[in-house]
Amino acid sequence: MPISNAAALRADDLKQLFAVYGDFYQLNLGGEPLSCRVVLELVAHARVPLLVNRLAELQPDLLVVMMNPGSSKPIDAGYVPRVVGTEGAGARPERVLTRPDTTQYQVMRVMAARGWGHARVLNLSDLRQAKSLLWRQQVAQLASVPGGEKHSLFCAARQEERHRIMGPTGAIPVLLGWGRDEEMRPLAQQCLRALQGWPVMGVPTDEEGIFYAHPSPMLQKAKDRWLEEILLRLQKWG
Image (cartoon, rainbow, N blue to C red; front, side, top):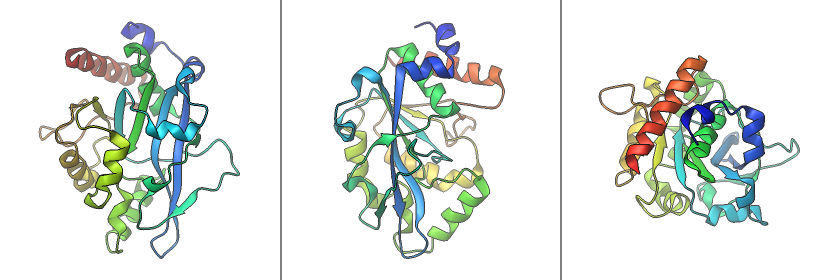
């Protein structure tokens, strides 16, 4: 699909093409449980298996890494996520229908332009917190808690789980879009170390290659520029 056609796709168009499934959990390390999401699947309706939890077994066409899940939540308001401790969230994957947002619509436009049917979205931090200040506070508090580093899929302790979620090293491209918040530097650096051997791409915002532009900036022109830049980079990739 031409870039201009992909950019013109509206939310209703994209929802006709793709379904959204998340894997939510509560992280309990001894204090108040924290709301988290480990994975988000953007998948063409025709590729959704009858047993949706089997999405976890499928190799996607694209991996995406963002900052955190923000306000992402299941469509079913009565859904109660499982409680997870130090064992990690990936031991019992559970996919449920999830409300999409503007960021995910941008990724769907990339998928539509490339003819892809499945993207898997990961995050520097699993913590579901829409307010950046509160998210930073949670991350800082977890730093002093045994096992607190496990809010990030990219920590060393979750290596086995991460490999299971991502699949064979280097098999597919990884799109980076976690933004430019300096407070994320340690998590971004940790992620980049874990992604060695993977073809990573994004729109860098610094000379070090630590920070990458968010897919859905406020201005529509900026959204369109991001989409065009990513599709050109993917075209060069193959």
